[in-house]
Amino acid sequence: MVLLIALSVPEVLDNVLSLAGPAAQAEFTSELFDANWERFNRYAGYVRSVHFDQALQFRGRRALPSDRTLAYIFLHRPAFEGSMFPNLSSVQWTVKDRRALVQLLLFLVPTITILKISCRALLKDKCISVLRVLAPRNILLTELEITMPTHTHAFLKGLPDILAGQKRLRSVGLPNYSASQGVVAALSVLPLLEEYEIWSFVEYQNHLGIGMDFDWEQGDFTALRSLNLTISLIDAVRVMSKPHQPRLDGFTMTSRDFLEHANLHSLCSSLPTSQPSLTVLYLTLYSGTVLPDPSSQAIPFNLIRPLLLCTELQVFCIRTDMGIAYDDDDITRMASAWPSLETLSLCADPVSHADLTTGQPLRSVGSFTQRFRALQELSIYLNSLGTDAVLGVSAGPSQSRLSVLDFGTSPVPTDSTGAPYHSKAPYVASLLRRDAEIKSDRSQGHKRFLQTTTTAKEEFSRRKTFWFSFATEVYDVLSGTK
Image (cartoon, one colour):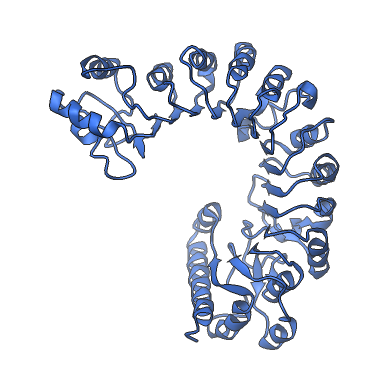
């Protein structure tokens, strides 16, 4: 159960917790009596998570309680024993000023295991002061995330000691500038740490990179299994080229800076050597601009071909706003290199024109299912449904049957304006499990891009209608109604 807090002046505790639903908004508008507190205490034990976001405004009121309000609550609650919510386990706190950050202290209680803090750069030293109460209050976190655009020496100096005291941490997310020798050394000896995330603000991505003294040799990272980087490509290459890396199961890379082909190839070339046992790989690469002709700047498959040496992959997903150019031979190469692959996503939602030349014909779905024995989920970008004759010839026996087929933001194929998709439904149905799911238009960012002009809105509406109708036809075939 989540309590979304928006406290103003002391008013109806009554409304705080009518908590029958998954979320509630608290507003105090009148004096509180014993009956109100009894009602509060009845429900308070159900509250597991508190999420406070100072940027949220409810009914035009400020989102933060005044000091007087908080004093009223904590001084007047009968039998107050230090925690308003005895079973609180997760706190997410997004603030813009010092007072809002300090009030986080009221919710740092021994029961919490998840803490996510997001604050402005000017609060960086105060953030360290708040985190220093974790040890004295016997708070042992399993997940910690700090979001802050810039740092000070005091922040970087104080962070290692705080991390070293959190022996139960399993997941840590920190800014890229914090990847210093001291911080990495503190993380490396945490016995349960399974996931490490390094990220940067887009506007700072080219100015505050990974610390030059970043080094995997600080410790063992004995439990680390997943690394998530949201940084520039050049920083990612630096991290993944360092020696003595922990052996990972999963690697996720997101970059929103200018996409240099050489850097991408360097990253893809380093992974098979440094991480030969990868089973999960996500690459999200955005140029940061709306390209006038995305098809002319599509990523050639040759740039990511070194990844074929990661032979244990079970999940591979790549997303870019430029599209990726691959052909039938490349599908064969992937199937041969990745025999255990269960999930494959090849740039199903590029921000591009409807006639993107890197799109695939519908028969390519059959190419994937014929060659990948273990494939269960497939996401691709289609630009053609093809003729019935071609589909009939290319269908062949499938090695796998898909449980999820995602067409992403595929346009309405140029060779299909309506009725022709009816004859394609049996072909697609033959490649799917009976309980399979067909998806499309999954990118919110692409939707916003399409809705910038009247023409774009019409195109978006047209493709949404088309793929919904296409999926309905396939479902009818699978269910035996057609």
